[in-house]
Length: 112
Image (cartoon, rainbow, N blue to C red; front, top):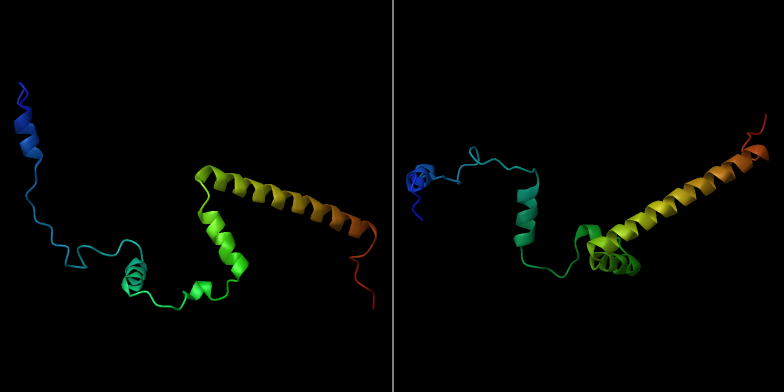
């Protein structure tokens, strides 16, 4: 589109014909350490052995990961809020039990 005030000249002045060579690691350093190793790991053919981080997971853990992975963002946020509320309730209960133990002298160290 040609504009009456010379917009074509302005757009053509913004064009760059510079050739960027991405071969040099000095010019293009790795932005996040470890990404290159991770990418190289993922490019390898898939093997039958599970990744190291999955070695200690039980079937219930894997099912939980699949369940959480299938949740929508809203559902995942609801799940996180539920866990936060549960953690808060457990903290209150622990505080009550510690106070109760203090009053009953359960936590007192035996005298030698």
